[in-house]
Amino acid sequence: MDTATGWTGETACALQAALRMSNQTFARHLRLSLRTVAGWHEKPEGHPQPQSQQRLDEALARADSAVRERFAVLCGDPAQSTGAAAESVAPAEDATRVAAEHRLAADPNIGQALTRLDDLAGWEPGTARSHVAARLTQLDRRHLLDRADRRSRIGQPAIAGALDDYYRSSMAGGFGRYGARFPGGPVTTSVLTHPDWLDLECSLTSGYDLLTFTRADRDRAAALDTTAAEAAAQRLAETLTAGTRFTESTLYRLTSIDIAPGKLGGTFGLSRFTSYALTLDLLEGELDDALTAGVSPVPGSLPLRDRYLPDVASVLDVSGRLCAGGALALCAFARPATFSRDRADYVLLVQERSGNVINAARRLAVIPKGFHQPMTDYRSDARIAATLLREMEEELFGREEIDNTLNAQSAADPMHPSRLSGPMRWLLTENPGALRVECTGFGLNLVSGNFEFACLLVVESDEFWSRYGGHVEANWESSALRQYSSLDSDSLAELVTEDTWSNEGLFALTQGLRRLKQIGGDRVRVPDIEWTVS
Image (cartoon, rainbow, N blue to C red; front, side, top):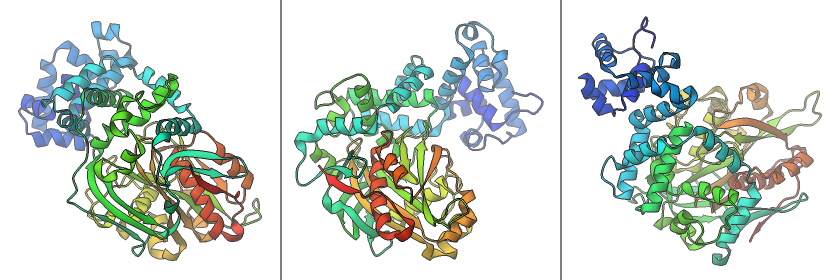
């Protein structure tokens, strides 16, 4: 800490982490209010009041050498750390561990996850924190990065094939895995669907999007046995060590399905992100690790999958389990002809997901893509278009997080016209006829049981790209953004066959291309694509 400028909220929190104290314990230690300590977490750039600065000075002066060493590392000054701990642990490793311990002690999102884990596992309060703390000492961030690299090398066809092996014997009733045939060859995904759920051509307006919210339904997260609870504790420890974003928030959970061409019907209840992250979201990692280890993915070989999604009937039983999920869309922007492009076309955007996201990390996906969750109006936000437009603002138009992934949401109407970015305001208020928003397909992803609404967003006016094309930029959820021309049939055929796709991303891409070919006219020359359900 720079003693010339005094304490900030950030350095105060660093001292709390070095002392390994909760907000409440730290407040008592300093003889200050809990609200004061919480305020430092909310405004890390702020400066505490003079009395608080004095109390912090006194606490640091009383601290032992180990606390001082951890505090120095957290403040970015490992050179000041001395003693056996500094000699035995490399600075980078020590900084990672201290940062993880900081979040364990001070991050309110992690605190809520720990409380939820205690509840689900039937543990005494504080047990989850102890389990996670014990695991932090055994984890090495480099090993987690190496494992993430191994997982990312598992191609989409391998994942789809493994889930076919696991669920093949329980397929029935016309349901099957979504696939596509096109000139480049067939592809198959892990998305469980039905012919009635495809080629929906459903405009996402109030007359067609009939999905509703019912407050009466409760969270269906199942109680955890020993194996599931230990896996959840390991997940939290790895999240802290890897520095992965983790935000507790409300999610919609699907409770019934009534979907047909031209109509989206069904109901949503509510769940919490922690309930999902500590249960069904663990299935993807378990499957990836089994494949990298050469384990045959059949019933009996995957303990968590055997518990949560043992057969197709359990996947379809959305009313009896936690079924979170979201919406994702192929985005197509009309472009005029230029000196280097002699025909008007659509530019199609594809993202390479970053390693910091929970879902589909390091895989190809269409953009926007996001969990379906409410902002401030649970009933109105249940519409799929609400999620798509919110994600479009965040992921393409540079708007700061609206869904509280990074910051608390305090605006009464986050999508009010006065708050919109310039590109979104142009689309929604100045030229509302320029944007077409449709759902092209629906399915349940066998990877983790998520519901997937595959959609198509088309901006049909050349003027938008001429004005705002230079403003389109992916946010932190993407490591790279690619663009393709709707006239480049060969490149699109190659794109479909890349094996780094997420399964839901490939589902949305192929369904979106099919629909774009129907409505795009001379701007579109994409391969013929036929879907299959097998």
